[in-house]
Image (cartoon, rainbow, N blue to C red; front, side):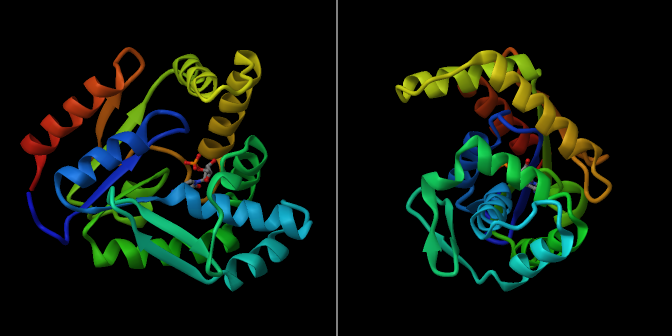
Length: 226
Ligand code: DC
């Protein structure tokens, strides 16, 4: 499976390990890796910065439409996302931006702008794309589709550990609440809700270590690749 034009889709809720698994797959098959949620986070960040009401579909659409996207491949195969020539980095990782991304990504007109861009990238291929709607909307013809799940509690525990490792404050109850409300918003929206494609391989990571998940996905990719 060394084809540069290969397209692998990984979908699932927040905090399930899609990025680590996606990067491992990308480096194994010499593909680029794109976290599509970063693009929605950029939109959320821009909407917050411009002070518009996050539910204002027309205002958020104008912001989405005017973004000039850039993509730069990094050494670990990750595609770094640039917005109007700027790399936003850690500014995109806050809970506030995650919430803004979840709200604005549910607005159909703004979403369509970003979806078009992602579809064009998927068409070029040579990528592992991670998100919520890759297997269902962005790349329904992907060569391989994974849908990762884990209980909200397992994901909240992982997030707490990650934050503590970075020496940051972590409140389990607040994190769990935020994960549950983001899951609800992402799954219940009308446009491209979070759901598995009918031909996706389901992987429950609740009781697996990251290494076990990566090994499992690499094994499945060997046996299921077309
Ligand atoms: O994966 P993430 O946490 O960085 O995504 C941020 C938000 O973006 C998420 O709450 C829902 C939205 N999103 C989406 O609607 N479709 C995608 N393909 C990826 C993310």
